[in-house]
Amino acid sequence: MSRSNASAATRVSSFVLLIIFVTLALALAALVLAIYLYDTAPGVAVYWLLLGFIGLALSTYVLFQTRQRILRLRIEMPPITTTIECKKCGFKSVREFQRGDYVFKEVEPCQKCNEKMIITAIYREVREKGKAPTFPY
Amino acid sequence: MNIVAALFVLKNQLLQFPGGDIFSQILTLIIYAFIFISIFYGQRIQLYIMLREVEGSLYKLKYIRDEGRRIAIETIKEIGKPQTDPSARVDRFLEYFTIAPQSLDPAGVVWKLEHILDVRDTRFKDEVKLLAPAADETQANNLENTLEAAMALNYIYKVIRHYYLLGKKTLSLYIIMQIQMILPLVMREAEAYASALKAFAYGQPIGDGVGALVAAKLMHGHQTRKVPKDCVVAEVPFEGRTAYVIKAEGPGGNVGKPGDAIKTIIEENEGKIANIIMIDAALKLEGEEVGEVAEGVGAAIGGPGVDQFKIEETILKYRIPINAVIIKEDIGDAVSPMRKEVFEAADKAIERIRQVILERTREGDKVIIAGVGNTIGIGQ
Image (cartoon, rainbow over all chains, first blue to last red; front, side, top):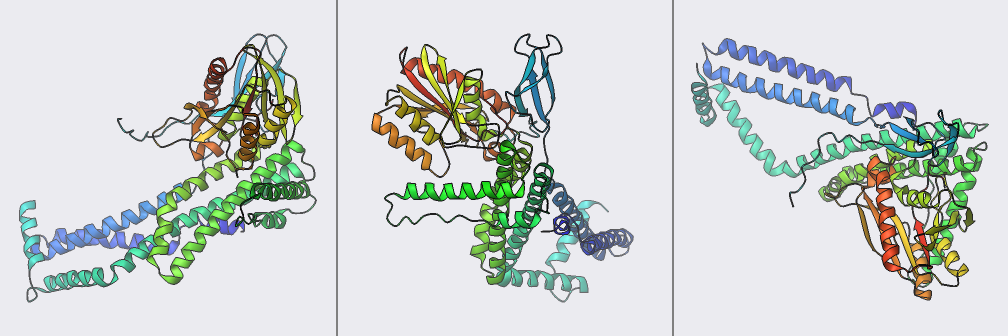
């Protein structure tokens, strides 16, 4: 369980990348060849066209999947906000969570009335990316 | 040439039988080979695709597990100031297991389970003290929770790895299929524990603590006293009634033993309690809103069942009605830092408690309000 093992999960094999790019290059070459052969041998050109498109689709798909895997491996930590309130004058301030904060903890005195303020809320806000469609009933 | 003509040529080429040009023969051979492979090796190909899918998730689980371990060690070093490197001890901790008591004769199994859980709890607390000698009680509780989350991640990773390797070894479609089918749910749980790790390490309130938050809001500003085990109670005047508000002692990561606390309060009052209201976070079904408040009857408490059993035994003895108010959230929200919707639902839950008390009790009655859940990041 060392650090090198931890990074192994996020690492993309250079051999896989080489294969992807070689396939991509060959696919592009097949497409170019298909264009050249189109007037002289249309039957053969169609095969090259087919091969080219299949190669192109496969290599871009694998490349996209590899990138997605790296993106998915990140643990996202949303920002946590702490709300501090003065019970006497109602002054409210919101700041980022700091280690040691807890709900109902007494913190620094109020800027307005010098009374001790307390933490009244600690939460995270979630911004829904693309909300899944809900069932209409 | 236009596209129609090209497609016509393609059709002619694809349908041509051997004997045509070399490309047609190759293509026909490929099609035959494809059919042959599909018939005889289709299942095996499917198996490899599934194995690959499980392998991808296993990589992610390994990453999450290693991150969990790293966070736990870093937090111990930062807070606990140990004299030696805690890595080896943390690795040993991650492998701890608990053997459930034998239930062939189920009579008395709850007490046996309680004893085993108490031993486990004491062992964990001692281990955390050794790992982090400089940590105070709150920090030690948070560290214990962090290590438990890391332990859960380690266990999930090992189980999935076991089935992956077993499937690979036996090439059994059914072993791989089972794990591949439950994988999305397992991954959701693992991701939830991963976000819980940081919440525990920093002492942030988690979704599961919404019951404790409700109780904390009700008891704030009133005198509290400790009740067994690891709980606090405050006597709060509420709509002309006396409410005994109970929660686990915060702000460290702690769930306490609400079963013992409720039993103590009932016995202190010789069973003269008009109603018990329990508040807890509950798993929502897909389609339900996060932070939805619902009401029902029964002991709203999760865990291994020991506390629920004790509460049910005591209320049966004194014939005390029990009501429950739950706040809905999914597994991810329950163990990760508290969402704004869940936090705001605490006030809605208090309103619901008020309604229940007004409808179900009379002025001058005594009621128990118990906020259940992990009180990490929530004081009183």
